[in-house]
Image 1 (tube, rainbow, N blue to C red):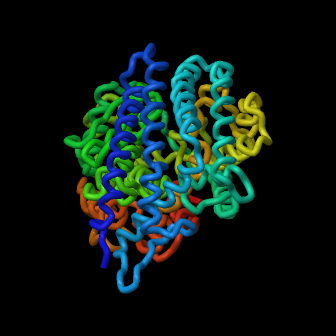
Image 2: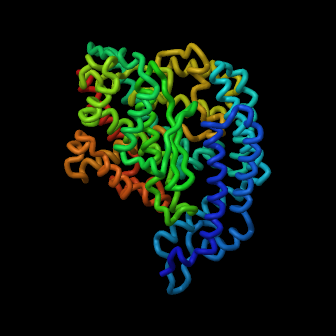
Image 3: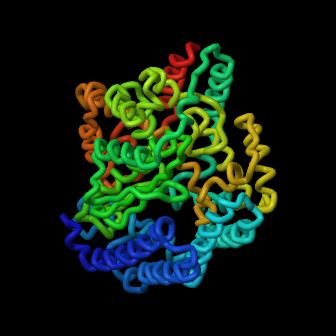
Length: 510
């Protein structure tokens, strides 16, 4: 039986490539947290050089020669010699390296460098444009990045739509055709449920969440919850950024960011929990496979399931707040002293259409994703002009959520993703919502007295379960295979819909 040891010539080179990518990631993290504004142009060049170098090494004749010894160049399947078989980790590693190599080989290195440079510059312009509420400032950069992404889709090749080529980079195997029925099923149940909620006689008071909450105290509470979740601050950090994110350079160095608004308590609170879920996944990857696909997350949909599981299934549950609300109440006694635990629970689960995706409730969140899914398809397919985006965005917001953003900062400029070329990323958020409920319900079945543990602030058994079931496997399995191993089913909207109907039916007495 052949093991990964037989692949050492390949894994040694992959490790070198990963270290270059990690160095580029450090520069990107710094760009979004501490870099002085004047360093933008130089930083874009630095990142572009490193990413170009990593790409050149990945598509080198040396990697191609090594792969051709062990992998069928057409299918990516490991080649079995007579009487000699590969073990499962080796077979999976070869499959995934071939996938990465075959995608990268289609992209010229000069193109990769130019795309990296433009995305880095666009991201910096986006930050300023958002601050100044100026879509016009961002438009030239958006046009450039969009042009590059359309070109990338042509290089990669696709079936049916160029958008599928980009989507596959974030969620392997996903296509418009596979996602549209999922979104249709969600829309068919969520829109009527939302209508029933808006017509409910139950009125939830969440005004106290907009009182003045001290910046440092919000961050301290966020750190407390992250620590309880099992996020290791010896191997991680919590910092501030314009848009919360998680980045990983190695399982021993995983960093999360948040933002703090004085008059919006949930923003920092739930972004810490959300990004903590991502951080736990990255800290839980198997270090022995670092540099290979087995030391990387399987897909963004699965990654998002971890953040949404912690944020919603845990963080917005009554059970969670039985332990943590008294601490929060003591931290902000003047603001929350007269607010009951039940009042707080219903407030953080209040359903109402909102402008900002990352602050949306569980029900309307998926509607935010649907409109982005539709818009970016049309952008990539050339059906929509970038200059028309604010108008299109506002129209779809009114159609889906019944509200119109008063500014572009609260509308088309709110998300960072398009600035760094992440077209095809947004659908993975909805997939993450669906996976999160499937996984959490399975954890409830397998972990004795899990709710009792959460109610006493003991969250580590859930983290260990997720580590054993998901984190440690890296890309050993495809997203569908992993989901079937854990729950017996591929991604399925039904558990999420049943969970939402039960939870919000109770809150709103439907």
